Image (cartoon, rainbow, N blue to C red; front, top):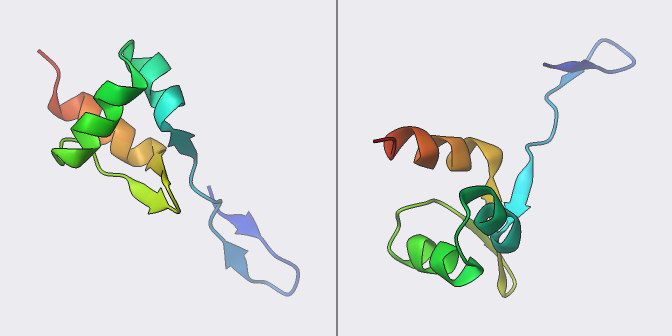
Amino acid sequence: MDVALPGGGVMSPAPTFYTTDEVAEILKVTAKTVRDMIARKQIKALKIGREYRISEEHLQQFIDENQA
């Protein structure tokens, strides 16, 4: 959903990002497993400094692609 700005502009809402710990909790795995999945390029992540962030979109894409 876009957000209307004063003066008629439109801004898309900022994407939601999760930490490796949050993704681990969602997927019921360890944070190390999530980091290993990132290293094997099974799930896309953004590296900020020494930390990874996984967008809600990429997490959902991973879940969709790995359903049994």
